[in-house]
Length: 322
Ligand code: UDP
Image 1 (cartoon, rainbow, N blue to C red):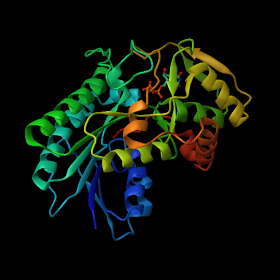
Image 2: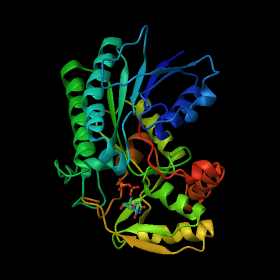
Image 3: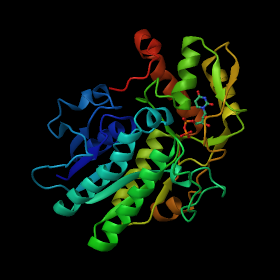
Image 4: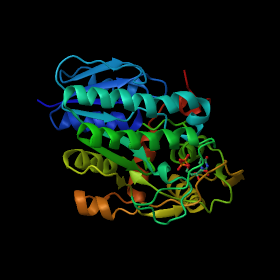
């Protein structure tokens, strides 16, 4: 049985990855410090024999007994509001956390996949973004703590590959949505859906002309799984190229949810990228991967999920960071 460590296991992406690797017959070790993750995302896995959970901060030394085949490093705050609240932790988990996990992979002879991001392209001057583009990132802006930690993550991962011959993978994840996102994490999908469900106006930042391209969680997990199982070492974009402006997106959510609220405009946060769309030629060619779930279909499923949450959960507006 393959043994797989997933960091950030109690988070949105991490918990869905735990499900996938359990379904693939792996023994999964989930690790999380629960600073933004929530145990309820993986509570259903606790009774399983091939799942174990370690409450640990990977920014400090990581020790595991026994063999290990794969590591997926997905521990990190992932919303702009989180980086503002916990900037140092964000920097540490992307840098020191990655260093510790590369060390563990080397020690165990494991293959490691690290979760990078479209944020390495910053506010991109090239559109759509392919993996050759070096990006346009402000190191000192509010997003710099995330973007630069992830750029360092890529850099040190390639160094371990080149210098130590470590088997590595780098996925560049574009905006992804699905069940288990924190309703109050500030990201646009839970923000708009939460507002619609509470009967509040939808807050579009700026004039809403900035673009994003949203990927459904099942497509994202499939891309990540295929990349890990490939032998491709260079970064690969995984995202849905179906691009929309945030204003159009807000209108889409209004139609989907049937809310009678309207759009209101708020100031655009500093360094908010004006456009973002993945070029997925590489993923198509190397992994035979492309997204399958259309946004209208994916959003319907996520709305059902948010609707199923308790009223108490729905009203919990303050941002939960321990
Ligand atoms: N956004 C918005 N209203 C909100 C939350 C986000 O208009 O209540 C915008 C945000 O300014 C950005 C886009 O939606 O342009 C996506 O934001 P998110 O935080 O989800 O992810 P990002 O891609 O910016 O990291």
